[in-house]
Amino acid sequence: MDHTFDEFVRARGDALFRYGVVLTGNADDAADLVQEALLRLGDAWQRVVRKDDPEGYVRTIMARQHISWWRRRRRERLVADTPEHGYTDVRLDGDAGLWAEIGGLPPKQRAVLVLRYYEDLPDVEIARILGISPGTVRSQVSRALDKLRIQRRAMHMEEV
Amino acid sequence: MRTEQDLVGTLRKAANSVPPPVDLGHGLVTRRRRRTRRRYQSALAVAGVVAVVLGGTAVVRGGDRTDEVGPMASAAPGIVDDPATVEGRPSPAREVWPEAVSTIPKKAADGFRYRPVTALSPTEILLIAEASFEKAGRFEVYDTRTGQARVLTTIVPGGKGYFEQHAEVGQDYIAWYGTKPNDGVAWAVLWAAPRQGGDPIRVGEVGGGLAEVDRIGVTKDHVLWSPRSGGVYRMPISGGAPERIAGTDGLWLYSWPWARDVPGDAGPDEEQRNRNQSLLVNLETGARRSITAPSGVTGLRCATEWCVGTSGGSEGSEGSDGQVFAMRPDGTEGKQLPGRAHMLEIHGGHFVQLSEGRPALYDLNTGKVAGISAITKDGAGGSYGSGVSSSPTLVFYWNAGETKTKRTCVPMREEDRKLMASAGATPSPGATTCMTETIELGDKNEILNLAAVQDAG
Picture (cartoon, each protein chain N blue to C red):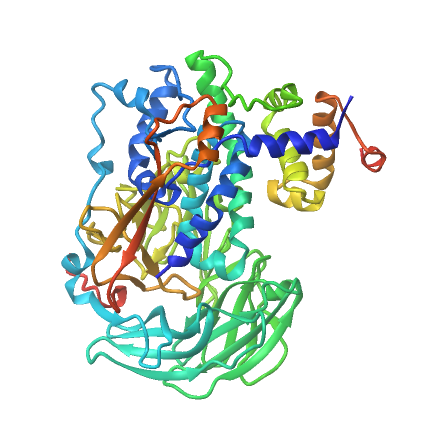
């Protein structure tokens, strides 16, 4: 039987959770996101483990789910009139403001940044994961970096 | 001005700023059970009944991650769970369909592990015997009446990085294919062997998009398959070039001779998963049946007698959120099923796999529902497996012996303590970190063969 799934969860759960934190901005949503994605992975385990890379599969689900949950949660917040969904205060040594500002980005821009700068993926791969075109990836990155007042390297300038 | 390097650094630090929840695996089990309740809570939240307050829970209390959504549960007075979605404990399959459950060894006499594929008949199970995980050695047929296995055919080793993929059972042959998924080159090799037993026949190789196999099928003279991009192709078992079957544009093989206008494996793409099937085509006769999904239903998948889909999912993009819906392909007899499902598919003509507190199968003809996982004494769910055939399998299996959970707790590591403190949570002095493992004892599985279920209602 599939002990291999349990092993995967044990081996990769923490790393996936950290990816979730970067995607969502807080521990609650990260845990939620990881568990939901793992449940789905578990259902598809036998197929995924044979045909695809399970980690890539679950990270893809997380990136997409993050975007779709965010939309729903924003509605809930509006109705319930609670303040901005708080992010964990990470007490960063240096630029604490940057993390807070990342929290203010629209979910797709944030996901694109995470995939590019945390996961270190090429634009084509990011496009595949989010189901958007590489051109959209580049324009989202560009907009996000502008908002965060981040200087781009020259090679990225010409892509914009 | 900030640099991209600042961004990289900030994301890395943020990722490491909170300790991962302990017990993620065990959390999955409880989460499965809790799903139904949560759905009501979300509905309430959307309706503005409660303020959504999710406390700062990185949060381990004495070692246990608190992942209950507390404040909302108490704010739901007067909400009576729909009886159809009450966290149920369906009776085990052995009680519901005693005629269809057998025990089967986990390993062959020579130590090869058995991986069930599907049923060949009410008393015969097709198995792959593997030397190690996913290193297939041979196909065997296990007779559940006599408890004997016989070798059907051997599997020719394919070299490093080669994996056998799904197998499929036809009238006269079984067929399977193998790929090298990790070398970056699209390539697949198709095999067949006489269903009664005999030498394996190497039917041929394909490359490029054709090698990204979605599902396969086998007739008396051809192996057939659909690539992920659609269309149905075939290759003569006696050898020859692949050819596309005319009129199969936009169709995918469901289970020979049936094809449909949605892929068997939609992958992680939400849009693909949620697309409704609207066509069921018999490739032997050319008969085409149109299917209309009722509004609000997503991910509809049809066999000849029944369709299943999801209804009432929030936001359309989240199929997993709604209830399981079933109807006849002509749109009649629509009904909501208990429980929830991720992988909606019809098995054996009238069974659908769903989760009702524990993994279960629901018989659309009779309304009977049966649990298909092992359970521990304390009620936690064990694992279960489903057969690895290309079209929907007829077999599901779980550990026959005792299934235990083992919980190991160790004092919380100093670094986790610090991380939590920096995230604003204060673990108590005696806080521990715990892990729960499921241990499955014994050398036998129980296996449910849907081909053996008697349809008495």
